[in-house]
Image (tube, rainbow, N blue to C red; front, side, top):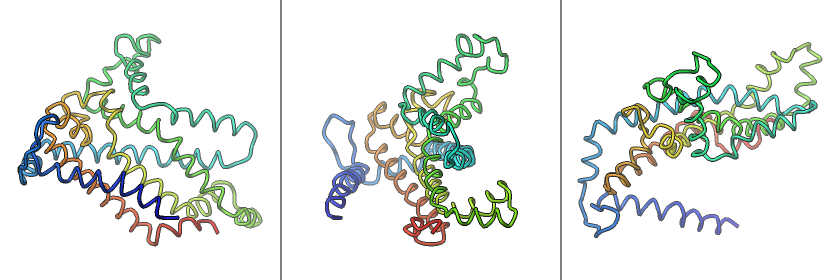
Length: 281
């Protein structure tokens, strides 16, 4: 049963990764002949200060989006795990952003935040009438907000499933002891969701390394290089500067960073990730 999955993983995971690793030791413009270049691409990338800046922006987006998404996703997931009226309708509304493409979201927010023709000037709200995508900090904040807005529904679904695995007997026993909703949340729900938090955080952190299309359409890495994340830097080197060697080196760096962060988060979980499936039992 595991053989088809293994073959798919080798075909779509291992072989492309080996191809990218090999390309990182070559000189290629994407069209002509591929020439061996040794460690030239790696020396170019690792000595470029833009790499440090792109890494910093990537980690900044990762940390801010995690801090923004986690508590909101958790609260929405807990809420949706209930059985009150209209929650099914609200659940459908919550998950709409997850169905939209990143490019479509970026175009929509770009139009809404336009300082001349966007939502702020239209409604004559001075707070919204700012150059959101023209100032460094504001542009970074907009990227974090839009990313969070898109992926909070997905992580809410994970938390919703986690909450529904918690035995009701625990809540019934706490009610007998006089515990209220807040006490139940901090004493039962949150501890029982420990491994769900680890799983969700791993997906958020590793997934944030691949943010490209939304940032490319929304800010194109600007203003200046204020939102030039590592994935966008890889695209610009590879497909705009036609430097496939350095772009492949950055791709390998992204894989290594993602693996390191995933292993770190798994280690923080304190036990084998497979045991998280027994959460709440």
